[in-house]
Image 1 (cartoon, rainbow over the protein chains, first blue to last red):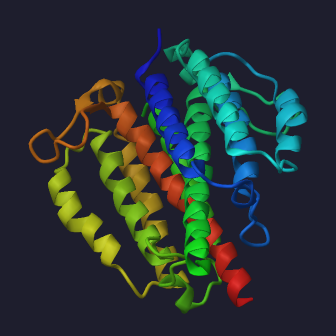
Image 2: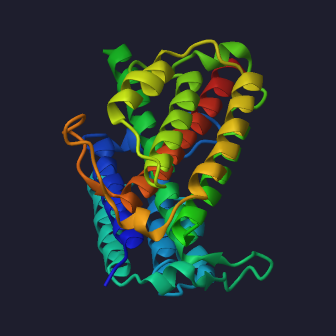
Length: 163
Length: 160
């Protein structure tokens, strides 16, 4: 049984993933790997980073107590090195994350919203409530989808100018 | 205040702090610049996400509002905005942070479960729970903060 907050998080994640599929639709690998400015990330990196992060945070907000150490080691560190993935490769990442997020959020309870989550690798980091994990995870995903959408606009504007 | 309203306030404060960092030190001409056709300037993004956060945060915290009035008033005004600068927008953001605290402090569990919609004013907007409006509202804020961060990088890359 889920709560209004968990259901709201699920709906927002699904909306963001739908938008992200539209953002990458039809883009060549060159566009997916483009870094538009120093300090920015490519669409491939944004997807590779934001999706596992979303799964991690919604699990943390749904009583699953995922390991932050394992997340950083298995996902976060590699995400920022990713390149050379196709639209189809990224769609598989998005679909997989969508399934994992749904599985976590459908088990959410009121107790999970108030429960405190602690990182297992950062003892100085203050614990946060499950509700904060959910709202942070959903917002962080949307932050990067918004950036990817702007990057699509930049790519298309550049392509139009070259035609 | 519920854990969800508190979490929304925490992420709202964090997001507005990120927005202040994104605009800090940029010259006045950066604020009306748009990086591609169909995109919005930093002035518009800032004004729009502040107005939307105020309206939807209130709606999900027991302050009923008219979506038609919001669209015709604050929202339309935000998309017309020009001539912002780092100092004036930072002051506006600080005001929005303080206001968010007052608005979200009133949130209850009943507000999260309440079904909210504007079937007569805006049939295009589905009826949603207060929780959906709240979570969507803060995600929308962060969406534009992420874009503002990227626009800062683009501006600096283009103009040194």
